[in-house]
Image: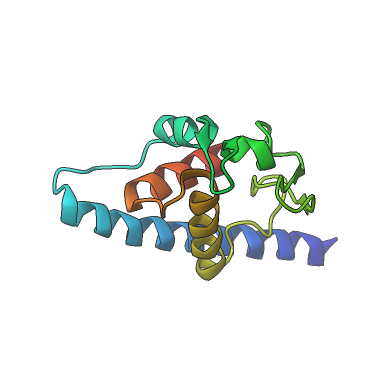
Length: 133
């Protein structure tokens, strides 16, 4: 029991540290463009996450197409049919524990849905939405 509690505490601390570092880096990028920027916004992130666009394969999709609207549930990659584990770190403690993984998937998913890399503001807003969902 003690090991489980310590593991949970460690994952929670790792998650908080990684997310804080990631968002701090994104904030510095946004501040270069907009010096009056203060904080990322979960509501803007939700709009980005749920809005539909013609994706990289010419099909209308949104982030919810693969990840579902309930981020505590597993999803399915619309291109490959592979199962996607829950995106919410509350349901999947492995999420948001490695900056390189976050950056890799943000880049790939923005390219799939928007046919471009997301801006620092967009990535920060989407991350804020996901971790608060």
